[in-house]
Image (tube, rainbow, N blue to C red):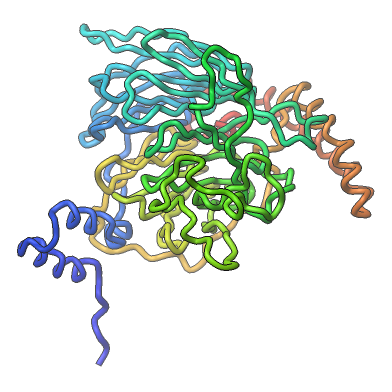
Length: 499
């Protein structure tokens, strides 16, 4: 006789008994139930939030989780009561280009919102007692400012990064922006790569002194703000640590679009045209990375302020065991600057959008893909986890926001075939101006030297031809887009693909 499979519901019954008998604390019971795979398999769209008139590039919950803030290509910021779908407030951000990030500052009674955008500006919006909104310019990046990161629990402190490679520190009490450093490439690339164009920044929730940045090369860089001298007397540009999968070291074709820290201080890194990787502290390469030599082989974790009892410790260092990051595969990240996130009360899952318009969910510990959800007709860029419960908010090229809750009666199963789109030259090769073209051309001598050494003399010529064709195609597309009707919600322009 076939045994009935043990589902998460049946597994919860012994926990319920233990809770009632006092053998399991109520909080632990809630965490175990909340992390149930059964809930993940029952995620379904609760509602769609409609109001924006452009791609929704950012969604974020407030600290309590009852308000969702969004920003869009329509330059507006909207505060939602996501449970009812009601708009609490909608206002013009003050930006003059696509809003890339909007976040509510904690412990501000949800009245303080910081934003950054494609115009490079960083702005602060303050909701007044009469319901009006006052927006203020704080600083500007030279080029697009993709992401900002708020110091955990602080109503005043946040950081931004931009395509100019600059990282800035803000204190809303003074309204002053401090330029910390401009991110530099590793030394052997200085002659043709002046800066690293930054796409992502994240702060360690357990140690807010540590923050990571990443962009158009293969490395995630970790910095310690305690090493910065506020009188400007020291050079703060040297990272404390570098992270990169061993096989990607030296690969100039890849870059990074998304970063996230877990509550266990693990670092999640999403690569373009590649996969997602999960790093622990002992996988660092040190302040001066060398291929194949993780820093933890000869450095004490205590030097960075990490405790040996944490997951960012040297517990995996015994013997000759090879240290490699967990990998998450199946999605496609080529066309846009996508985020990546953790999901679950203890960050038990990893979630990402994809160029195929779906959301992918993996088990963090094993890397197993357990869920694929249709979420956008084009591309899913943003997935935000609720701070306290199993709820997701997602957005992409479509003009709505989707709220996902575990409400489905039947558990979902994985598609038998997860279709992969053909590999394309994505955002890393986006050339929209003569300046972008010249920057790529300057890198060709270095590529020629490397390929000639490998006996591939025609590679550089093909790259040159591809750069020129890409530039011409982008210019033609831009001219065509100017003639399109902006109100046509079913039309996906080139600008949409580079939200």
